[in-house]
Amino acid sequence: MHYTYKTSGVCSTAIDFDIENGKLHNIVYTGGCNGNLKSIGRLLEGADAEFAVERLSGVECGFKNTSCGDQLARAIKRALAE
Image (cartoon, rainbow, N blue to C red; front, side):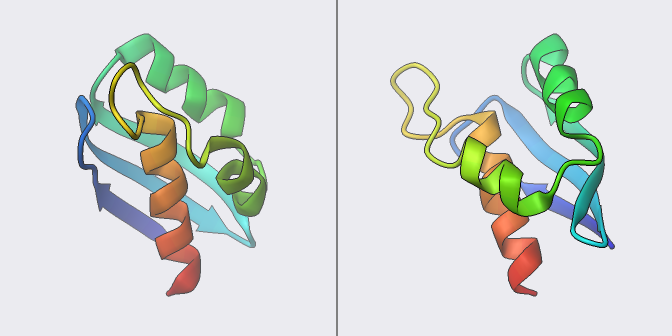
């Protein structure tokens, strides 16, 4: 299933990703730190969605109480709850 999540409180504006059989695929951020966010997508390609949530939840960016990784965790949680 394909999901698009509008981010909040970070430089990126959206995250697109797929979840197939509990695994993450095709993670693409819009905006933000291009190289770092491409790296997150590559590292998590094929990873278990719950694993990603555990690893990324609560990660902060500078003085912000969230990060692009934390936003992905929130997006995955929402997608899994549907």
